[in-house]
Image (tube, rainbow, N blue to C red; front, side, top):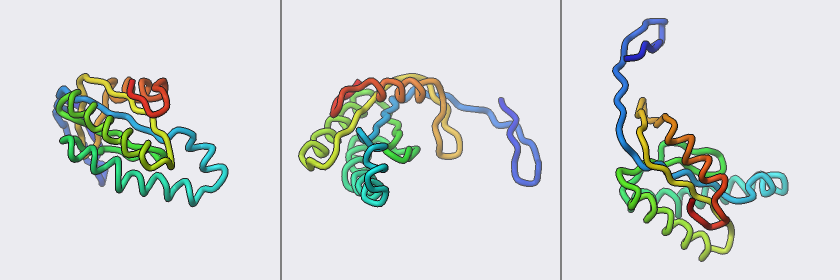
Length: 139
């Protein structure tokens, strides 16, 4: 159990539930460069990709986005197979668009779900794997 503060200063004890989840971390390659060149166009590109490619592929594979990272998303799945399926679909659609490239990291491990967000070392590891993935690749 962990003590958490609530509005008004009231404290409560919340039992944190852990569960096994596959975490998919995704980012758009070269986003900082794109932002430097044209912030509005870079923002619009990521928003469009999120709405038309990332979110539908994740939802179709049974996953859920739990965080938008500015240049990508973090999503959770019940299985690595489903996360990988979503990753493959995203990469295929991004390559077909010819407008961007992505990197994806996937990790399976214990997570804590709280208030619509997901926490844990598994999230951190998925992000580290994403950072070393090849362009339009999954690590």
